[in-house]
Picture 1: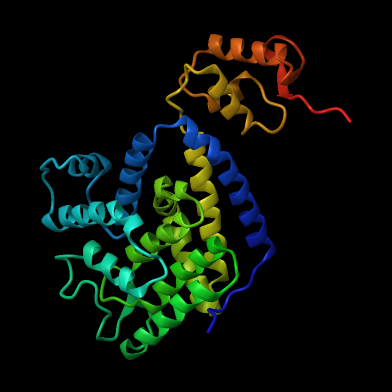
Picture 2 (picture 1 turned 90 degrees about the vertical axis):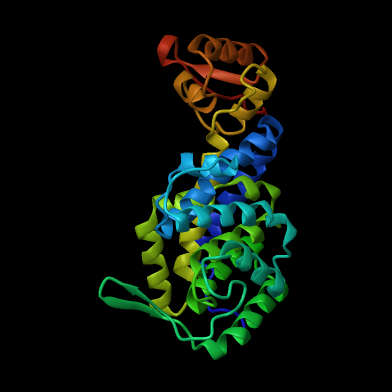
Length: 322
């Protein structure tokens, strides 16, 4: 049975923006060293996902643990990070459409933190916020069939994979298949599903944008619970994915000495009139003199047109005639 949701105009609009951003990411992967991008954003991902769950370690701690350096801190928090490092290192090993791989991932992520990692819960659970119960999960005896239906949906439904990843994220929160670790597994497996759409998603810290908008995240989950449809959470998550992609694109590129790659990257993102400051915001790390030389050369090469003069000069990509 297909999970209930609607494809709204906002969902279609955000899906279009994500598709556009993925096109830009093709040039991004040519410019940025893969290993550096992966490491920096992996740290953000692990730190953010665990912070949402109450982990107290900071990004420096996570970075140290990735380097296998001993740190001080609560033993549970350290173990959570160590487990997450192992799980994210194995992302590409799992088939996102297989329940057995989903359970294997949970066993890695929650090893030593719960009694039966990698196994569905055997008791009734609910989510308590403050003094009220915000969500009561389906009975534990329903979990296997609900999860089978959910994975059948992943395999058989023809909706775009990006949208289905958001549906899956919500349904894991709703079904709550495990005693603990449901939130981090929902976010983790969505990343694995998105990697089948484009490999760049392995390096995009979606969890960081969720953390930065945590209150809205919970509101979207509650709104979906109230409506009996994941539509609101889909809209929220598509916005998060789009923001995460564009923040990744906008990070400073190490290849600032390469004029051709630098200008190609900048022009892939500057779609309307812009000034030197806008160019510098894209090509972080270069001097204003270098930016001025770049813009002058682009004008001479016929790739830009300009309006105004001096500090008031505006530029845009030269439009084809006819």
